[in-house]
Length: 215
Image 1 (tube, rainbow, N blue to C red):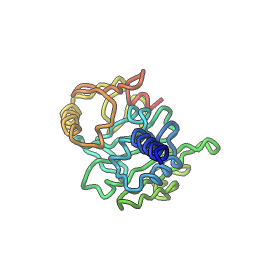
Image 2: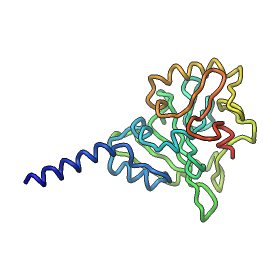
Image 3: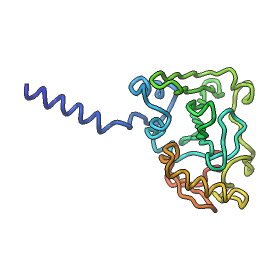
């Protein structure tokens, strides 16, 4: 009886220690599905907090977006690109946006050489829904679907240039973002350093977000 008790206690203790470490590279729609199979009540904020460092340290910020996910200077859209941009994850943070609880992703298909565009719908707590091929994505992303990103070094609607500098016209907006970020759990996992003049990814040896994503 004593042995069984200690084994059960050890299993429970290890489960607590490993909570939030389910993800490892590569992140795919399948690993995300497995995550929600074991965490069905997780919301967007909890999910983002459980992403591996290869994602929380590899992202770009868009203060203007042509997607269905809205963006503002204070609440920019996050596009995680991971270590190699084979799985892109986009998150909006404007509370009034109807898609506030819907994340978008683009997953590279090595056999076809194209991306599959899908959604992770967490609008119904406890009933996560993942669609791997969403037809309406083709309206903007074309057929075959592909990422939309400006030509180096111009990225319309994005914070920072090719060397991490924040433009003078974006500086005030970025300063507001930095202040609001402190209390917003969607931004707290992001690994970067910044002020109203610059932003650098702190977990990458090449810290310039937009140029890294472009490459």
